[in-house]
Amino acid sequence: MEEQKWLADQFEANRQRLSAVAYRMLGSLSEADDAVQETWLRLSRTEASGITNLAGWLTTVVARVCLDLLRSRASRRETPLDARVPDPVVCFDGRDNPEQQALLADSVSLALLIVLETLPPAERLAFVLHDMFDVPFAEIASLVGRSADAARQLASRARRRVRGAPAVPDADLPRQREVVEAFLAAARRGDFEALLAVLDPAVVVRADGGEAPEGVSWEVRGARAVAEQAVRFSQFVKSLQPVLVNGAAGIVSRLASGKPFSVMAYVVRKGKIVEIDVLVDPARIAALRLPSWDD
Picture 1 (cartoon, rainbow, N blue to C red):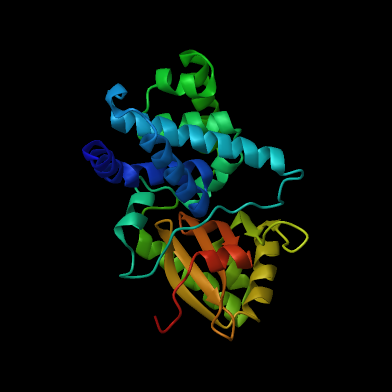
Picture 2 (cartoon, one colour; picture 1 turned 135 degrees about the vertical axis):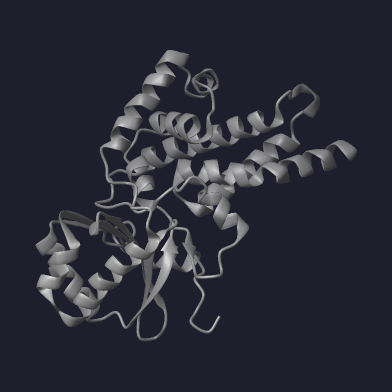
């Protein structure tokens, strides 16, 4: 009994780190929770006296669980989504909590998670564990069944993909919000030229409406196409609430009924919007349990 209590206490002390690892690995809040819970179940069935480094053991186990989930996900999906947007971590002013802060440690933007979604499972694991959590390649090697040098190469390939994408917004959050507000105001007015003024010429919009046949996902590229879409979108969304989405400027949109319709994350670089990632999947929006205006 004493050993189980000690294990439970140690697990709780490591839970935030495990959740952060799982979220970066999976891009899904519910799957991350499942992975952490599975890690606890495995710990509770393990002889603790044989574990010399419990924190390292827990990180390795949650990573292995996540790797299995990623491989299972890839095998189930016969055709890839046109646009896959990971679960956002949405913080309303003054309402963020320690668990959300743990998930967002080290500034994991939604755009970065989208880049990670494009990586093969082994590359994603190597990059997340080594570059984000300083796990040695020797330990990563045992997880992917390769040598330490091969694990290093996996992380290197992933790193090149990450560096080639505009995944990190500018650090000036008030400036991010100014640019986003200018974009939204121009869309409401139908001011096409003002929209083009705040959009990067190569801007991309990804919208994830869930998997077919119920959902429709799409991707739009180029400032003119994005500006046209923004004007159409503004006609049926009745309210927009500024929020933080994974630490960057974002918006929760609502229909006339007050029901949340979408979560939008913006990547602003050098005063221009270079990426907009939109979650519109009704089931996943509901799972976020966003507060109503009166909450």
